[in-house]
Image (cartoon, rainbow, N blue to C red):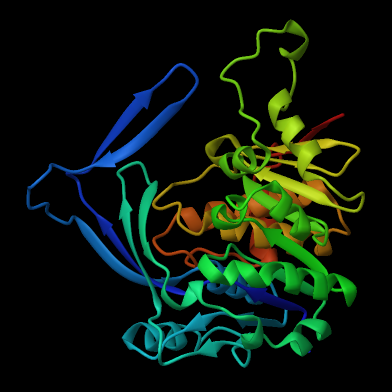
Length: 348
């Protein structure tokens, strides 16, 4: 019996960094977009290169295990050089792999991550087996025996199982954390609501929340009554639309600005825990899974859980690789002790 079962993707990630990369900003009246560019037709020199294992199913399973939870992972891989690398990476991780799916007919997920000098990244992703998880692949009995089902972002046909597994977990009193991905969100709010109905915790970034709710965060709010608000009124409206059940906690991350949460009574804001940024890949997985675990550790203290999540994601972005830099609870608490002024804030 496991404390946590994660379901999501598993990929071999190849990180590529080049000093010749440019960041191009494009502005419209209501939006700013940034693009990574390289000289067209040129041979671009690679400054740094590394191969790491990643994917939401892998990253979160490793994090839960590192935080001391008995963890099992559900993900789908092929039988190729990349699958061998993924399985090899788990040899020193305390994660049960009895529920993974291996299919010789499909290729293992593979990603090329183009890292900018700012530490952010653009991902070229081949979904492969990650997009082909079927209901018949899943060990529902294992889910039934777990305390928490963590659903990482899923892609392609794999999203068809989301409603079934969320329903099953809820019906069997298994706590559900749903980290919504863009593939699910693009199916529309009516589709998404079926999964939200069964989720105790929902986590997404601001761009995903905007896409899901069709609410845009205005660049400025001219009404003076909002001038002293801790959280933008448009983000509050997102929370209210996403929260479809009384027992839910909704979390929206906002990159370098920090993260917000809403429990139906109070809004919470937690700033970023400052530190060096090498690569942001895996930060979202570390944040969301740590938030779930820290809620359990801190007896549902939402503000503290946001702080723990921010510290752990700061550890991940300080190193190359989506599971490098992950901290234990004790290490997180030591870092918080070292910065007593680091606090969360609330407002109604």
